Image 1: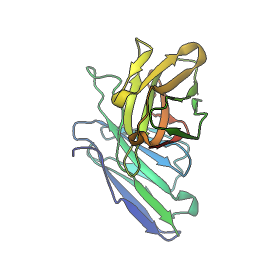
Image 2 (image 1 turned 180 degrees about the vertical axis):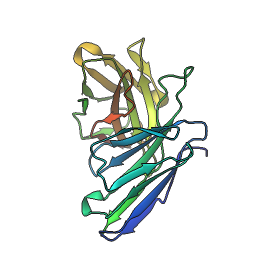
Image 3 (image 1 turned 90 degrees about the horizontal axis):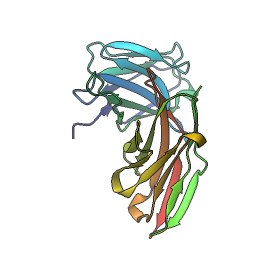
Image 4 (image 1 turned 90 degrees about the vertical axis):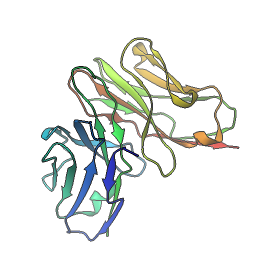
Length: 117
Length: 114
């Protein structure tokens, strides 16, 4: 399966700890997105990258959150000083965009479920 | 700001019944519209999409959706559901040009009883 891969699948940590998640997009996809999903809600956009450039960030992404995509391939999402409200499913998606392939849909990974004790 | 409303949070149907899930969005400009499905224990998968052209779009597994611009709606339909259609269905929109983020509805959980 060459879909979007996320690691870990589950993360349980104590409040105040830092956590980092990884996302490996579909190999030829140049766009990468992070979303957060809480119970009973649809995914909410956090940020997206085109290659290594972070082009948009949601106001949901507080200063405790940082995302990187240093080589334009995999991405990491770090949450510092975690809080109870950070408990959620963190989803990664990727898509391909170039002049010949506009309007390509986003493909999602399985997500990382974060639980804050 | 864009928003998406899915009116039915939970739907229970018997096999062979017809399905229609409502989706309305708020955005005055040109949009791309999507339906994603999440089967139990699996990731979100694209069911169908509308970018332009024929407002009646067909997706996988016998699903279709109709874009009615005047009603800001993109309802999902299937004439005869199967037990395997049990899943959560999400409507999503992104505005063109230039907006990359998807705005999702809250989802509709469909249970099909055999």
